[in-house]
Amino acid sequence: MSKPNKGILLVNLGTPDSPSVSDVRRYLNEFLMDGRVIDIPSLRRLFLVRGIIVPFRAPNSAKLYRAIWDKETGSPLLHYSLLQQQLLQERLGDEYHVELAMRYQNPSIASALAKLRPMNLESIRIIPLFPQYASASTGSVIDKVMELMRTWHTFPEISIVNDFYDNGLMIDVFAENALKHNPQTYDHILFSYHGLPVRQLTDVEPSHKHHCETAGCREQISEHSRYCYLAQCYATTRLLAQKLGLQPDRYTVCFQSRLGKTPWVQPYTTDVLKVQAAKGAKRLLVFCPAFVSDCLETIYEIGTEYATEFKAMGGEHVQLVESLNDHPLWITALEKLAIAGKHDSVLHPNPIDKLGVVAR
Ligand SMILES: C=CC1=C(C)c2cc3[nH]c(cc4nc(cc5[nH]c(cc1n2)c(C)c5CCC(=O)O)C(CCC(=O)O)=C4C)c(C)c3C=C
Ligand SMILES: [Fe+2]
Ligand SMILES: [Fe+2]
Image (cartoon, rainbow, N blue to C red; front, top):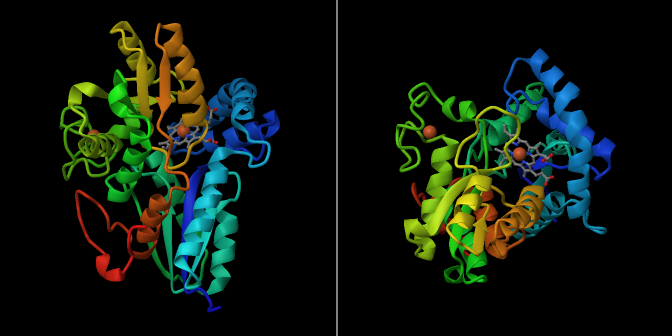
């Protein structure tokens, strides 16, 4: 067995160590004290998070985590992330060493970097597992990695995959997972993305600030909206709709998981459910393309909470499209990202067929 020469660090958001109230409290405290997540001055954040949000939220969130916790495999997010790490390692072979980390809680980014550092690697590629760039997710991972690496004496070649919202193989896997449910048999289709406070959307870059909603971010990706979460969510949706042959009146883009009282990007998924129920829709198919693994926000929020709400409004069925999880083609997408970075971008193609990575 040869010694690995290249490091890959996969990073997802994080999950509590267990669904106990104390572990959920520790997780929420770390998560929500991140200044990129609750982006207000640190003293106000401390008061709001420690004094109000976490004490009230932790017991309730712990109940939700208990509902999705598997007796053997624990948190679905950690379970699928570990599978992705293991399957990617098998694909890449001995030349590479693949580590998994979570931005919050465990396995921590610090512990993953502590394993990679003494390997004296030629390069390390960091892959935050969020298809669309947001400062609160991808940005926070990059920030943390940079903070931890600052003390290193020597650096290998470092690269970061900052988004992959238009990755062709990822689109193929979501489309394939949806086809199992015969999309044409549903009254309407929702593309439900994780929400963000509106102010976090507009703070992208000076030429984009204040123009997000008027600069056509929902219609196209432009040089001003290249890093706009909203623009990337709509771009992912257009690619999926195109792949599945969906006309615009068959689907709605919406945003879930709002927290707090400030305005978040709209339309909210709950409002779209109401509109659809009022129109007489009975069956909804829901994609969650901001998540590469099924997790609390897909399994519980969509599959249980929103499904129950929709039924109470007269609907009959809400079907979640399974996430990418351990799909072999998604592992191929990760393999390509690991070897060549953003290669399979549909909108900005940079083919790497010459590297010999073939779709399996
Ligand atoms: C898709 C990427 C994500 C972004 C962007 C994001 C922003 C964001 N999230 C919160 C608050 C919460 N999110 C929670 C769970 C959660 N969030 C993501 C991803 C993104 N969040 C995932 C994958 C998960 C699920 C984790 C799991 O263990 O399965 C939670 C915790 C659950 C709960 O108590 O409801 C909170 C809180 C904010 C405030 C925010 C941006 C500002
Ligand atoms: Fe979140
Ligand atoms: Fe925008």
